[in-house]
Image (cartoon, rainbow over all chains, first blue to last red; front, side):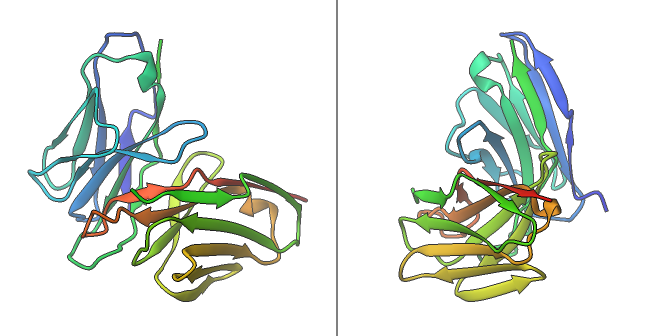
Amino acid sequence: NAGVTQTPKFQVLKTGQSMTLQCAQDMNHNSMYWYRQDPGMGLRLIYYSASEGTTDKGEVPNGYNVSRLNKREFSLRLESAAPSQTSVYFCASSPNTGAPNQPQHFGDGTRLSIL
Amino acid sequence: KNEVEQSPQNLTAQEGEFITINCSYSVGISALHWLQQHPGGGIVSLFMLSSGKKKHGRLIATINIQEKHSSLHITASHPRDSAVYICAVPDPLDFGNEKLTFGTGTRLTIIP
């Protein structure tokens, strides 16, 4: 059972380049999330999707776009990468079956460096 | 937004010691999450609790809703417990309790 799969695991970009981080879950979860983790800071929510076809901005959405392609997949796009977007990115999912406070399941992360 | 503070930021202990990690938050919540981030980076959910105490093996989590405080205890600590432990609480404006605010984590190192 793969859980939440993120690709790629590592990426180096030049300022101004674009790229898409991929995330897929095989747990039939409704909600999916993109976070970034920076040194000395807690995980911060970039975008959130409560169900297929819906997305919502989180705490730090500027410079990012997302696409909930289907129930399984939630991608994060950097249109014009900036050094401030150097970070470790995590995708997560949760059941969101209506019951509150359900655990989130995380991917292994993508370490992204912008030069 | 809920403010989450964890203490200590770093903790080094000898194998076998009893470990306590603390988490305080500013706004009342319905439940609190404890997560573990492995040295390789992966994050797993350990506990979700809304009252009292929960125990999984050598890990015990407690919460005091009135004092807005939770603790994570590890009994008979082992080097494999070395990780970053993170607490997280729901966003008070998110009625589905799906959006979380995370603490900065406590880095635990257990020396053999």
